Amino acid sequence: MKTEQKIWVALATIGCVGALVAMIAAVSMSKGIVIAAMGIVCASIIGNFVILFKHAGRLKKIVHALSVGSQVKMTATYPPGSLLKEIGTATERFMDETNAKVKALQNENSDIGLQLQLLHRRKNSVEAILNSIRDAVIVTDDRDRIILANAAAETLFEFEFDPLEPLTLEESISSSELVAAISKCRTSRTAHVRHELTFEKGQQPVSYDTVLSCVEDDKGHVLQVVAVLHDITREKEIAQMKNDFVSHVSHELKTPLASINAYAEMLVDGEAEDAETIGQFCGVIQSQAQRLSRLIEDILNISRIESGLVKVSKQTHSLALVIRDSVEMITSYAQEKNITVHSPAPILYDQVTIDRDMISEVVINLLSNAVKYTPANGEITVRTDLNEIEGQVTVTITDTGVGIPAEDVDHVFDKFYRVKANNKCAKGTGLGLNLVKQIVETVHGGSVFVTSATGEGSTFGFVLPLSKETVAQTV
Ligand code: ADP
Image 1 (cartoon, protein in one colour):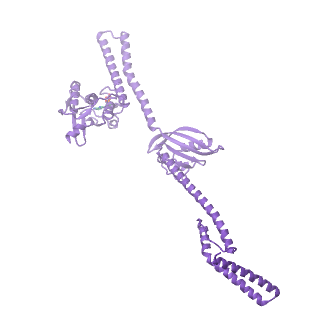
Image 2 (cartoon, protein in one colour):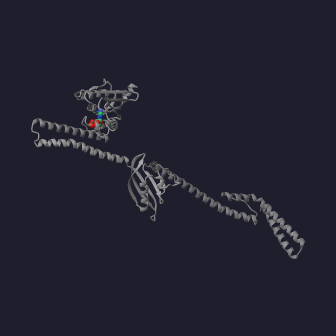
Image 3 (spheres, protein in one colour):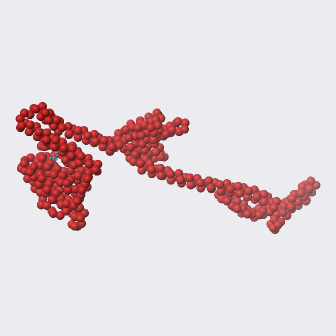
């Protein structure tokens, strides 16, 4: 037993003896003995307090540990049988239990932290996925408030989605049709419903294939409505273009066919009596058949290029030589109308990598248009401009013809587009310039252009990239 413990035992014994003597004295009414006994009890209490004070630091440590919730290992020794030992043992037991609880809570806390991190990561990835979807996605709750919207939806309807302050459908979406459709889907609890909706986007009508789906809980209560809007504007345009193309083609084919049919019938019926009339009728049939085959050839060429099925054989050529050969081919046609064609002196080195036949077709098309739409005694000038810095060559064909009205200029490269004002000048299919555009732009990566003034003439042209060897030689 340590000295401190011995003192503790002695003081406690003295205290007890003092208290006993005081009681006996009180019973025997001896004043002196009572005072002496009280003195002994006080001395014992003071002694106990001295020892208690000595252990106050340790108690303070225990209280601090309890307040911060940390684990403290108590390894103190207390005087046996003392009040302090009782407090110490109870506190240590309490501390052990608290420590165990703190440890469990800490483990639980780190688990929750991990789960929170995981949830946060999952939320971010769901947001990133939603925003990467090009379709607009909107999710509304049972009170038609937007509780989720991706970037495409925000751009389409020009609103800002804030999950902390959800807006109602009416507040965020300008299309009353969509608002009504979502509300109806919710109230009618339709599992999936499809609508084709058209909105205004930058003053342009845009069409959306809209799928609405109801999300219900186990009890069949509608929780959310999910709206997915897929932009079908381009698909609709293509479908429209195909329809237009088919109706144009049928119309264009019908005209020469009807002619051929009519003249053939007249021949069969013997309506052409003399050789001259028969010759005339046969001539019409022949020219209409040629028109028909040109038309079919143009349609096939355009669709082959558009679908990427055309066979292209590119080699480096001197563009000026290609132009010279093409000019030669239309010279007799130009001479019929006494039209003069000025063309450049050919540059004899290879400048461009082209499919020669295709580019010849381009030049012949532009030259024959110039002749077709230029009145007699006019002039046609062909120019080639080499731009070594830009690495390109520009070909222009300028005529002194009828010109093109301003409202038609932007459309002359469209399929089947014919300028009404010029229809009387020449027959045509309205496909020649579209074929030119396809060959230059789609097959050769160049560009086409036109400038024109009614009554003064037109300049059609195209730009082609110089072949790499040419650029290397000239730099
Ligand atoms: P077409 O077979 O009708 O000539 P194109 O596609 O070659 O078809 O031309 C489309 C339209 O552009 C023509 O109908 C014509 O009105 C106009 N056009 C083309 N070239 C010229 C030109 N050099 N001068 C005036 N108009 C032209």
